[in-house]
Image (cartoon, rainbow, N blue to C red):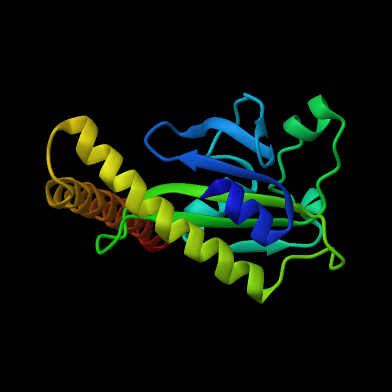
Length: 178
């Protein structure tokens, strides 16, 4: 899926991050059959921005974005300009499973557009299904059980976020009252 998606996107690089590992999965797809290992945090950079905001992020000037993490570019003498990130969500539940990040167009158009956004969303959907099946296989349960666990985890996350927001609101309003 990654190799096909990278080719369809016309991207030089395509990274897959897994949420439960909070890092990139074992391969960076540079060419169809070539990859090399390295580590990047899923919570930082443009990927972190896409996963926190739960939306696709695209930029023709990725390196100029405040969130851009230049560690890979610096260590590999690369220059990232176009970036397209898409969070990967569990089907039916909406829990974050990971993120795809495409970098640099190698076609006539130097930027990612609406067509590429559809491609990366479709790839994300397929990868989410495969991740769910792999999680079920590893745990010895079925995908429905995994979905239920993810739903509960997502609801806990929402509850914690709501409590934190209300706490911050109470702090702001109590400060104004005094």
